[in-house]
Length: 200
Image (cartoon, rainbow, N blue to C red; front, side, top):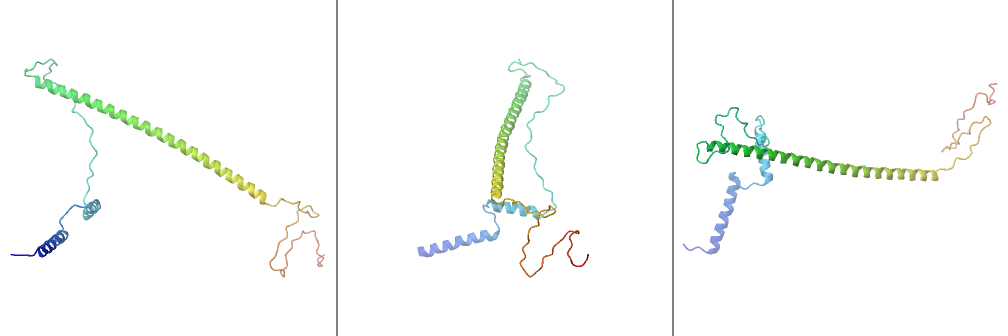
């Protein structure tokens, strides 16, 4: 069998591409990306919506079993090596060490929690103080801007001129401008004024 090296390489490359196509179509699971894993988990959940989902509980607290109510064989801590009760002494000592270690861990955890709460309260207090300071600055700036606008309006507004008063002492009405000069203005008069239309 004499095959040329070029032909051999071509057949090998075609085989490798066919293998990858077969893997993709056969549905074999390769290394999935995080997105694909999440999509797969969601599709699995939605496949059977009636099935209850069990959410695991958090980690359990460490605890040791309470001491027995009745101790049958109470031995002293001075049990000699080689005595028949040495294993009982070792068990008691181990339980006592576990109890002490558990108490120390709980006190350490309590201290860490208190330290965390204290630091969090301190940071929260600093943030609130900073927020209050910034709020006061904003309010002061807003108030200054409003005062400046009021001053500008006061400068731009025409000064009130001495209004002309009629004979009755009432201020004269402002003259209205009409866009169409042909339209007559309606004038309102007091009852005591006579028009001279012949109503007298």
